[in-house]
Image (cartoon, rainbow, N blue to C red; front, top):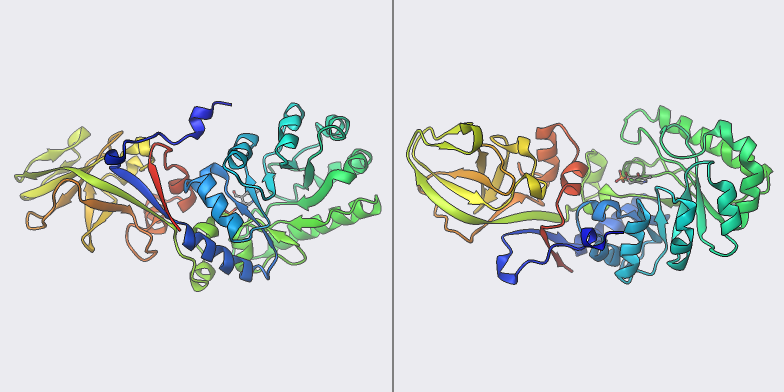
Length: 379
Ligand SMILES: Cc1ncc(COP(=O)(O)O)c(C=O)c1O
């Protein structure tokens, strides 16, 4: 594992020109709201991809203190990062694990999703010396990971051998955000049939879970004992139900103004000269670019917040910089902060609104926030 990739770049304290401000209190409150929406079920808080860009260890600690059942990550490295950060609650590795990595996972008490039939014999051989808890993933309609229902029968003998370690059974909804619950209900029926087949073979996992954020908000949890929300913990949602619940976005992206220039009409800005000043104005240059995860296609489309107003991002986004146009009468000096992503869901530069402008989802914007951005956490 390359540890350097996991460490945020250390910046000089005076050099913090670009920072993600993460409000951990909001994440804890969002957890409370989602847990209530999930009828008090145990929550596996999904913190993969550096907690959707928010910072895995601080977010993981906040969720642990706020009483999650456990945390879910994508791979072994992400699980080890949390353990190194002092997190002690259960950690579920959603993407599975090659058998060679079982000793490392066992030493750190990780819980592993069993995502396919190929390594069942290796697991049965290794688990007595290197025990981990297992959650059997069933592919009930997502078409990615998991044993297909049609495969279950032939693998029951192997699963019986793994039974002492099989703590959970899980699946993933493909359409939890769809107002029509038809396909989710079909997935659940398939899941229930698989669980009945397991029970007939004497395999009784004590946990069962499907539900991502949307499934929690939509009440699709049915007989599940646990849920696995991610996005909603960060206060982001595309569902009206999420706004009714009062989820609070936890992240703001703030850049300090590096330079300000007054420009005459006709001046062009940036690569390709895609912006031409229609009248005299000021151009503020911010030290945030597509290398930080700010999408290049927000050039001439995005807005930033400053002194209670919003101003347009003009010209192309560069690797490390972007440029904002302000009228000449707006006082602005280098060092002043401008907000690139607002935590006010109604603001035109909220993550949800910018994602809509880009035709994408907020996940993509937060997950793209590079580790070189300083994260500042408030309790
Ligand atoms: C297997 C699994 N469970 C749960 C989640 C959490 O989903 P969401 O962030 O939509 O709540 C994800 C996210 O991608 C996932 O892959």
